[in-house]
Length: 392
Image (cartoon, rainbow, N blue to C red; front, side):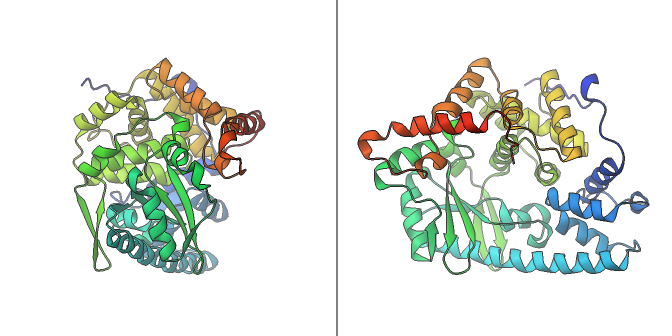
C-alpha cells in the first residue's frame, strides 16, 4: 500500500471564512480535541451566542459545556447557568437512551438475534469515556439483514412500532434495498433506527456485512451490562461512510473519527483491502483527509490521499467552517466525487434515480402486481428535489 499524506489544501480551497464564524470554528476544534489543553486565550472576544449556536449545529454543546465548566475561564453569569442547565438535560436524556439501548439489546438477544448498539450513547462511552459528552437524539442498533423482520417483531413486543409500516408484500424488496427501518416507542416516544448496512442500495455502496459480524471483537461495559460493538476497523468504515453520506457537515463526525484514531491501533492494511475490494477506498481516504485537515491526526493514519481527495476535503471543510448546507445537486455531486472509479459513480447515479427506498415504499400502498410503480414514484421524487432544495 502506498502512503501519500496530503495535508495542505489545493490553492482553490486554501482560503477559509474569516471573522466570528471562523473564530468560533477554531474554538470548537480545540474543545473537541480532548488530548489538547484548552486554549483559554481563544475565548477572548468570543461571540457567546454564536458559539452556542455553532456548538448546537455541530452537536458539540455537551462537550463545550463540560470543558468550560471544568476550566478556570471566567464565564458570563448567563452563559454559565445556560451551560449547566443544558448539560444536565443532555445527561438525563442520554442516560434514558443508554438504559433503553441496553433493554433493547437484551430483548433482541432473548430472541436469539445478534445486536450491536451503533453510535448514540454507547459509542459515546466507547470513544469519549462518558455518555454525557455526546449529543444523542435517538438509538441506533445493528442487526443482521436476515434478522430484520424477527428484530422488528421483538421490538414490537417491548412497545415499539414502525414509523412507516411496509406492506408484507414489499418486505423482501425493502430489506434488500434499504439499510434501516425506523421505530418509535408508544410510551416514552424514543426514536430507534434498526440498521443492517451503512448505506441503502440507492447509494451503491457494497459492504461486507458478514465480515462486520465475524470481526466484532469489542465489548463495552456500560451500566453493569456488557454489549458487543463493531471492531475498531469496522467502526471506522461505518463512520467514514456515514460522514460521506452527509457531506461531513457536522464537526462531531470528524471528531469521533479523530478520537478513534487516537485511542486504537487500527489495522490500516485491512481497511485499505476492504475498501479497495468493495469500491469505497476513496471514501475512506476522504475520512482520513477530513481528520487530518481538522485535527492534524496524520502520523497514525497512513492512508493514501490523492490530490482530488485533498481538494474535495478542502471544499467540505470550507462548508464545515461556514456551517453551509449544500443544495441537493451539490450534495450528490460531492458524494460522487469520492467514488473510486467512473463505473461506481454511474452505478450510484443510476441507483439513486431509479431504486425505491423507504420513502417510496411507505408513500403509497400499491398492489403487488403494480410494485414496479415505486420506481416511477422514486424518479418523480428525485426530479422534484433535485433542482434547488437544500440538503439537510
